[in-house]
Image (cartoon, rainbow, N blue to C red):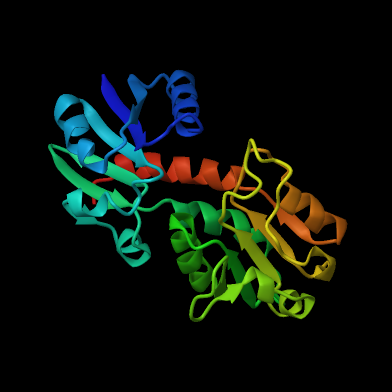
Length: 244
C-alpha cells in the first residue's frame, strides 16, 4: 500500500489528512495518509527511511523553508518562492514543489478586476512568499505590511484610507483571526475600504473571518482560503504522481 503524509509541528490543525483519506476512499485508491508530527525538520530523513512505501509528503509550518537543504531537487516555483510544501519521493530521491502559488492564483484570479493593479500583503512569514510570487505572475504590484518598520514595507500604523484606495487588493497571510482567536482582525483602517477593494484571507477556519466581515460591511469583495487549500491539495496529488 502506498503511503502519503504531512510533516509539520504541531499538526492538530491539518486539513490534508481528511482531504486525502476521503479521496482515497471515494476513488478506491489503495493508499493511506499519515500525519508525521516532527518538531525538527531533520527528522524528515527518518520518516523517509522508516516508510519505504512513501510516495509523497505535504510540508507545513514550521518546516517549509528549513526543509530545502534536505532535498535533492527543487521545482522552478519552489526555488523562486524559497519555500516547499510538497515533496515527491522516488527511490529515496526527494523533489520539492510549491502548490501554495497554484492554490492562491487559481482562487483569486476569477475575482480580479481591471482596476486591481496593486496589492498589500499582510504578514511577512512563510505563507507570504508564494503570495508575493503569485501576485507578480498575475501582473499586480505588491507591498508588504509588517508590524515593525522594515525597508520597503508599510507598517500597520502607516496605513491610511488613501493607501487602501491605491492598493485595492489586500491579502491576509498572517494568522490573525484564525481559530481560536476568531474575534481578532488585522489592524487596517476598514473604514477606508470601498466596493473597489478585494480582500483575500488565507485563513480558512473560521470560514467567515472578522477581516472578511469588516471588509464586506464596506462593500468590498471577500474570499477565504478554503478553495485555495483544495486547489493546493489537488496540485499535490499531481506532483506526487508526475514523472518530470
